[in-house]
Length: 131
Image 1 (cartoon, rainbow, N blue to C red):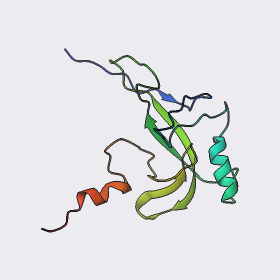
Image 2 (spheres, rainbow, N blue to C red):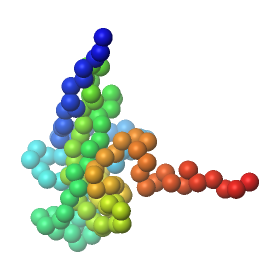
Image 3 (cartoon, rainbow, N blue to C red):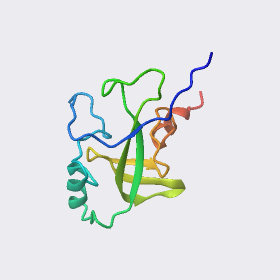
């Protein structure tokens, strides 16, 4: 017997969210219906003198957690899709973007945020000092 999972449902960020102050997540922030960016992103773009109408964007995908939403175990977890303005293009496909909560984060141009995927921040863990 095999379980056939349906494709992941792609969602936009909701208009209202519950925050846990001690557990900040840069990829979660409410967004008005029909808006291109969150107000946190617009604030950071204004501080950086970036025009919201002409800025390049990267579409970033992050799985919904079970604390945010319920879905049947026979289906894949839904995915939030977020448009993040690019502040800087870096080598090898990396981009400095403004996350929905206003944080500046380096992501790959593919937009994947899988846990344990091996983003730019974990290289130091793999390197070991000689004994």
